Amino acid sequence: MKYREFGKLGIKGSAFGLGCMRFNGPASGDSIIDEGKAVSLIRRAIDGGVTYIDTAYVYLDKTSEIVLGKALKDGYRERVTVATKMPMEAVHDRASMQSLLDEELKKLQTDHLDFYLMHGINKEKWEYFKKIGAPEFFDDMKKEGKIRFKCFSFHGSYEDFEYIIKDSDWDMVQIQYNFMDVNNQAGTRGLELAGSLNIPVVIMEGLLGGRLAKAPDNVQALYDNFPVKRSAVEWAFRWLCDRPEIATVLSGCNEAEQIDDNLRIFDTVEPGIMTPEEHKLMEYVREAYISRTKMGCTGCRYCMPCPNGVNIPGIFSAWNDASLYGIDPKNDWGFKMLLKNGATADKCVGCGACEAACPQHLSIIEGLKKAWEEIA
Ligand code: SF4
Ligand code: SF4
Image 1 (cartoon, rainbow, N blue to C red):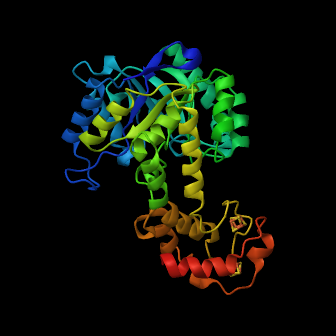
Image 2 (image 1 turned 45 degrees about the vertical axis):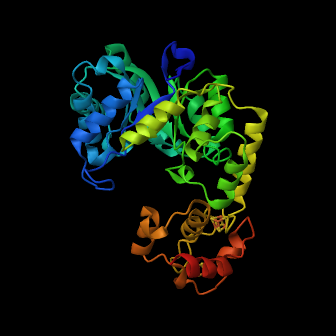
Image 3 (image 1 turned 180 degrees about the vertical axis):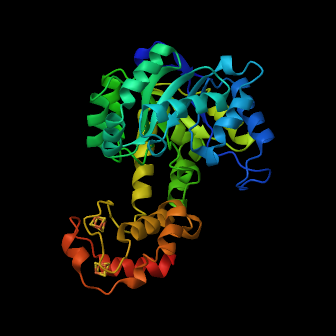
């Protein structure tokens, strides 16, 4: 296992951080968590050298912290740093924040957290957290020794990210980043901004929710033709670990083989490891994925709301996901919700209001028809 510097914090952590959001039941895919299996997976990762463990209050129907607490008994707690999160929905004032933190500490069976994150914030959520006094609460908990580091995880635009990271004295940030998201969310600009402030960055969605783990034919052909053979997963993680700003890459595992494969991969990666030829390969890989795009919809939502209730960006996103990553919309939570809400493409009456509003000048009406033929 390679260990990396956490920017200004003066500590090191494992390059592979274990995410505790994907444990499942005895049979893969079961929604009921198999506690024994999860405890054994967590300990397997720690025994293999993992020192960074990530969970959240809401993961696995609020059971993830409980299972992690059990796994960290018998001396395992002292071998790792623990990160968990405060969801905006669960707090409204200082008393509720205190009660939530105490509940999380109890579930985790520990007297302190290492990294405590405001969960999944954007500018709007950050303003809420400020309004209820969360930054001061986090600072006070640091003084009391209940948390070591004040952090946030982020989903939003680069502009939001820049605003938030400069608006408080953060110890660490967690962002979504992978070779397909260089210009999405915080993106490469956000990563470099955090690096310039010497704030360590923890990465989530390094495989884009598993989408990058299995390459489509045109991408696999590029990997196959490269002189050094590596799996799609290894290329994705290797590409991330090349960046010096990144402290830890989270990976949620639900099988021992995944843990072992990650332990092998993260034993070989460090900043600056990618050769110019490998960087070129990953540029071609990105282009090969992008060439599969069905509709160049940015998700800006200027076309919304449709007077007939069609979820235009949702349909295009599902269409693109199916083509780029082989995601079956029928197994996708977002698409299932879209169907449930009746926001379907067959509701379109061709009024043209959306096309007039679209800054990308997309042929939305025709696109919706084709998308519906292919994914409905
Ligand atoms: S053209 Fe169709 S999708 Fe666009 S606004 Fe009109 S009804 Fe909605
Ligand atoms: S306005 Fe155009 S680019 Fe924006 S969400 Fe609608 S279809 Fe997509």
